[in-house]
Length: 233
Image (cartoon, rainbow, N blue to C red; front, side, top):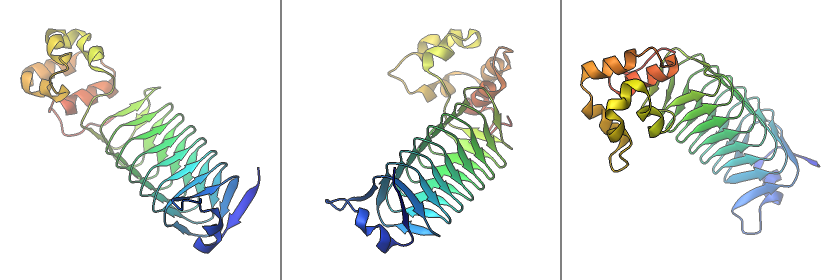
């Protein structure tokens, strides 16, 4: 696969599609220095930058995306390989990688953040939706998301704040301390959050005190049911 090198917005104009709605590179893309793209960019191979990459649209790569500086997109950031930035990674939509996601600074997305490998941030991790990883999730700062879930149950942060619960309703309805409310939990006509208004504080404390919960799920429940505003993993 051919490697193309660009150093300015003028250099990448040759990759603009006929309809003029994006830049498409049929190969690898190596960027010299800081690079600002005024619309979305899609690369068949990997993307590598000596500085930062910023796109007015989305950034998508058939390989990995690596930048010594920031990686930022008004849309999504998606890679079939890993995503690695020396500083921050930020997306207006979602961030998704088939490999790991690694940032020297913070990782932030208005939507979800998902990686088949680890998610590691030198700062904080924040998502409007879920944060899910096949491996570890580590943040030197806090984690704030819809919910946070590691498939190996390994999450490290100063604290976690969530608004929803991982897994599906039926999972919780089958748990012994929540079985008395199974019908309400599985009632699809009601918002999942309706459970907060059904349980008293004492009942919520009893549910969360059950010794069968994994600490990560217990923490999520404590915040979801209003017992805490955040928890320490």
